Amino acid sequence: MELFLDQGIELTTVAQIAARAGVASGTVYLYVGSKESLVAALRARFREAMAGEIERLVDGWAGPFAGLIDALVDLTFELHMTHRAEIDLFRRQIPADAIREVAESRRRYNAPLTRAIQQAAARGEAAVPGGDPELLAYLLSGAIEESVYACLTFGFPADAEALRVAARAMAHKLLNPAAGVLAATGGA
Image 1: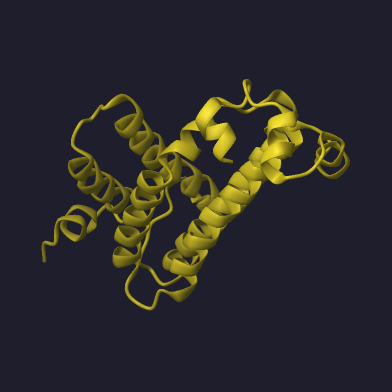
Image 2: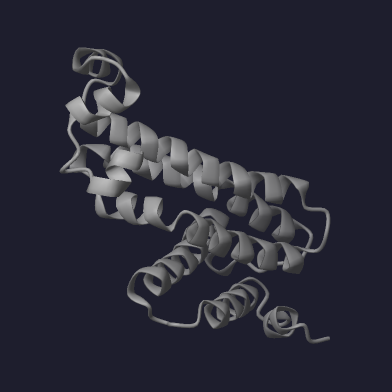
């Protein structure tokens, strides 16, 4: 991963990867097939680790759904800030033949949020506009992640904490229109 982060995927060679691993180039080809396959595997492993963090949060949550929404927004921000370089690398480098794998990884990444929305809706704690919790999970996580990415990559908006507060308010408003703004801002 370090070579890709330091040099970019295009400039990193299999020979460099092999040298860093202390093996022959042929061994790399034998076990991973190609540099592109290695990048796809690293991307999948990285996404799975992030999904695992979200799943642990959702599965271990015992409080109200409004608190879980705040915690999910916070975790998304923390993961993106902590792993900024990796996310930037992978977002810029998705080859056409990896799209299906990336889509499946994204589905697994969103599964805990989908499940949390379904459970909250069943308890009457959340509305599901359009009736599709999975679609709502994709829209919500995508909006938050893209905003965090733009903030960290392009500096807009410049205030990440204000963006976090706005993301919480948006999520609450979307998932519980009657109580959303009050919950996100700490109101009664």
